[in-house]
Structures are given as C-alpha cells and as structure tokens.
Image: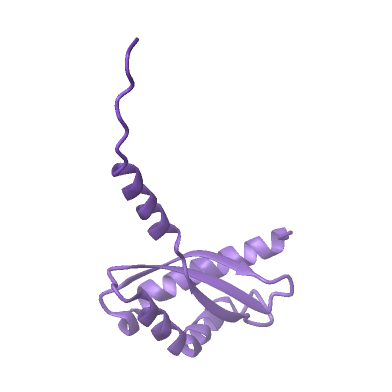
Length: 121
C-alpha cells in the first residue's frame, strides 16, 4: 500500500528528474528525448525506482547504461533541487518503461488481424 506521502514524494522526484533530463543533463544524452513516466518510492524513502521512456534511440539498453553512468551527477542535481524537502536523497534505480513499446506491438497486432466480415442471415 502506497501512502499519500510516498505518492507526493514520487511526483516531486518525477517532476524534477524530468526537468533535469530535459534541461540540465541534456548534453549527456544528445539527440534523445528521455521522459520520466513513473517513479516508485520505497516505504522508507531510501530507494526510488525510476521508469524512463526513451524516444529516438534504437539501442535503449545502451542509453540506460549511459544514464546509470551519470547517476552521480543526476543525483547531485536532484539533491540541489529537492534538498529542502527531504533529509536524504533516495538511491536512484533507473529502469526502461516498456509500456509504450508494448502498446505499439498490441496496436500492430490489432491492425494485422484478418477478421472476416460477419455473414448476414
């Protein structure tokens, strides 16, 4: 069960990380659009699972490893932004959000279905 406080904190992290990826850390990921789709914070606020959606990148795993490589700078920047709201910045765990890809695959499956027309009696 997620508490209201966890939800508020996860939304704050989501908003600030989205801003970081779009403005501050843009030079690390040139030519890519990274959006933060969802953030889950542990009950003790020590870990934040961040789900990223990546556009314009063919090798998403390589980009995820680049994000993890720059995790320290991202966390430091996040600390500057939300340090007044919390005592401790949670450990950031980045994951790829597969939701958009899954939806696209399902859409393609539905388009390619061959359903014969219904016979009239």
